[in-house]
Length: 375
Image: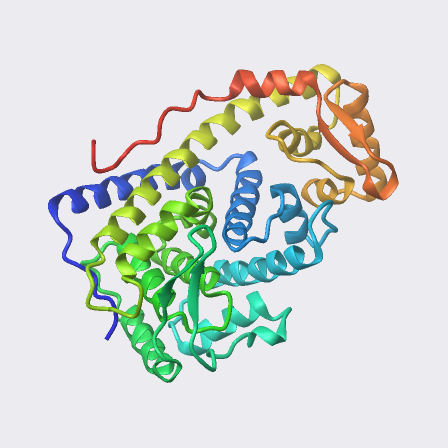
């Protein structure tokens, strides 16, 4: 027996419809009206999701280091352990993106175990790709207490098979965001692995959303929201879980939490599309004014939003050689748009005061997050 999806009340149905409308608007911006900046937005949004999901588990890297790792480059600050965790999660999420439009796709136990191996394979002591061999407990370090006891290890294979059957059933009457939320909840509560259960549950939720086809996988995830609201995320899981394996418990609180997460994440992404559109237009004007190569806009846009730009991360985006990239970045420094930091392999570039002023002038004023149940 798994946690069952509750019947949605009127407020939840309205919230789900508001989420659907927001995602349709976002899809129109990023799919129907393509612009050059959308590649930058996709890359940074995926990096934000990967960084956030790992930060929940204590593996902290900057977004620009997450981008560097995704592109096979050396990070500036990441520890060896954090690097391995991010690279593993990045690999799993890349596979999720590959599976989004696969016409032969089916959920399977082997797929879940394979994704787990991609994430945790850097540490064989954590049994990557294998069910846990014994009991497992979730400890809340802030509360200094055990907050959840997972079902017995011998129940895991059967529960995982039941979850896969439910995912493949794909009830069309149930909103995709709710299906994804229930997949996340059940995998998190089964806690089938020795380590990495939270990351795996969040990855599964992203896969279910990617398969829905509403949005590109990079924009479907709520992992960034969960990373920014980790305490609330843990609290609602603890509330619904009830301290041990109790699949008969009511999941309404979890569904409402996820609907709010989707609503606020989509709202924030729409705001970012407006921000980057204005920023891109002003950077194009700045590039023309200084007679700089058009391709420099990729480096300037990254720097303007706060990332550290390096030759190694700029050149694959601009599709140029190392020498040309060095010359471009030196021109941007000479034009007063970038500031060089460090030496040789450690050199990176940050936004100048001029670039900061441009960014400030194009940034939309942020308002308090909306509640989809209060509208």
